[in-house]
Image (cartoon, rainbow over all chains, first blue to last red; front, side):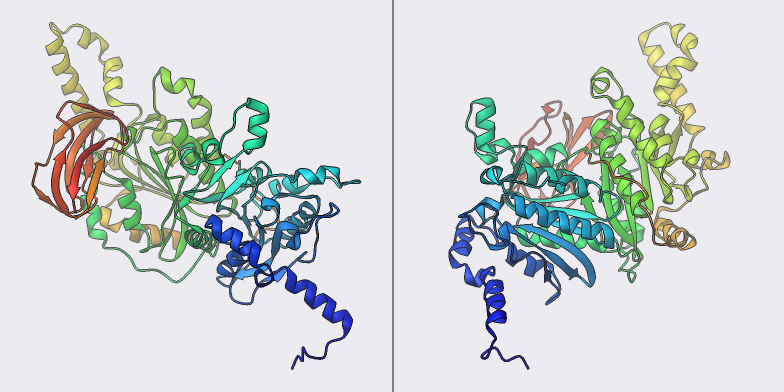
Length: 505
Length: 73
């Protein structure tokens, strides 16, 4: 039994110093955070970690600048278990000089990131703070700041999750921008620089929320998961890290019969591909990322019979599923995450092709669509492709078609195949016949008839006969076929080296 | 009773109004069809309720995020 009543002086000093950094010893700091409506860093630690699993590093560190005081110098960090799995975590403490990055806490965070690299531990970053602490510019013999370089080198080696629960500016935004997945609360604000620096550069005073509100970062694709508050943010981070436990007990399967009617009979009628994803995956296992950006595509993690998969789908509700630059950027990066960590990809194809026209050329679609193809062509993770409806042109080629050597390639009865858009193809193939038509009405009728004929020769069964797909299936059997295919694919051995870097965007 | 706005997720034109004022709808029912990229994109009821307002006419242009109908739920 520990008897704390008779302590030696040396031990007493240590225990007192340790107690000073805790919230119980800092009622004024806690009250300030309460007033902001925010959690303290230590409250977040408690909510994230399995009980009694947190081991703190650098808790006794004090600011380097003379006369400044601050618990753990504004960075709470250490190792812990989250849902039974080990992690490294770093949490900026807003109550210490607005969570700023100091000479000392840079040394601390570098220590934690290096630790994560050496021991292959996922990293959770709680990014609540306003960038560099100006006072520390006066620190003499200030060491260099490898923080961002070391963190960037974790890319693809270990999962990195950022949480922006309030304010993340400058250095904190740099870290946020490097995270594999960034979770942010709806009322948070982030930006390359906060109000004082923006005012110095642009001559105008803005509030943090005017500079970089979450709504802006959600629409730009910077935020992957938008949540209401700290509790939801932590739940999302835990759910995300859970996918790296590649096989869990199989979850409940939704009723598969609904898949038979999910693609409308009317070929012009759109449907929400999210419903397909939700039905194929175990109940409550899906987590969509970047839902506010690149809406012509849906990217989501999920589980099928307990096995982690990454789903990449076209979204017919938006641009008819045509792949534009934001959709391509979103898909390419998601594929990189899955490939880096050996998460099998399920590709759901329903696209009329890459988006066309002068407007998309201005966005650099030639290069950005190439990113998706490059990511898939160079991925070694298995790809399982399901053609739901449209499979046209280079869009289909990119969406897990035969040349990409998917582990399986199946199509639904509604699958329509075309090497290019059929209407455009008819214009070229039958140019002379169309030209010869007597009236515009006659020409339109001829065009419609020829298009329909071309479509008939490319139905799912006809395409199956030409061996464009491994099989054409009952949509209600899709999940079963995916499960059986996944069972033929062995779990990859743990990697000794990094497989690939994940681009920040 | 709360009001629930049904919004178009896409920019396009109103192809068809598939519901009517006062109609009782259930979650998932199609309210309005938007035409965009030669596709009919349904705006569906996000909850059970009664249609208390239809904000658009067939042929009208809509922008992403525009309210096309209002339900009382």
